[in-house]
Image (cartoon, rainbow, N blue to C red; front, side, top):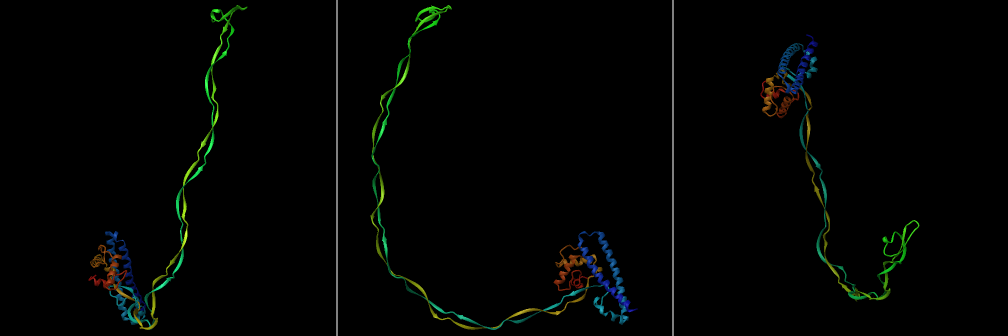
Length: 381
């Protein structure tokens, strides 16, 4: 068997293991996302898929075992493959799955004392000391001032002439009265009227006949009178002189009873008690030594660099419905799995297993379940 053939078989076997684990993570995530709509047909298809994967894995395991047997007979072939050994799990076993994970760098916390502030010297100023006392001091000297004594006023009543006496001429109009008088309106006269004397009044003076045969009577018409009113003077008009007496008004006015004067007033000196501060001791200075001050600081020292590591994980072929239910139940009993136990691996199951692993300081993964988690839960899957 040549070296090229052995190397090819080893690469194929390793790729099969890695691809099986990665496809398991992708498939399980998609199943969990649609777990709310799973049907009996989907469950049967999943079981069929698991059976096919188990058969394929068994075939890969046989090929890998044959490759390892051939590789053990040819030390030269193993030497040529040594540079790619990190790409495969060390000492893989049939029926086990592995995941290549990044191990973060490790740090160790170290504490040490460092100088926070150097020793120094401080100068303290001691202030001057004063005492407080009281004393009487002249605030204002004695003096004099002129004080005005205001005038005294009083009120008096006085009768004053407002309007002097006078006379005025009053006209008395004439007095008339209306009288009635009977006067001649028309004097007595004669007039001719047609008709016989029998039709006329008794005042017919004569009667004649005209050429046409008409009878004309001359009658006497008596005088007529009428009554008229006329205005006659009774008392003629005249004028009278009327005396108008003087008008007076009583007024109240203010008069000076005593005029204003001045007087000299003596203002005594003014004293006050004040508080004074007297110097007892002057200010001086004092030198004080300040010791050095230390503090403890903590820093992280790297003890190991980050590296890649192969870890055994739960295989997809082992994620049967019963095994997943058992895993979910154990996680639920410990308070990590919050939804119903349905036997379907998904993001909720992977998240619960990861949180459990971190709390127990076990290897943890986001898209796979380390075998240490399965053993910690006392499961035999």
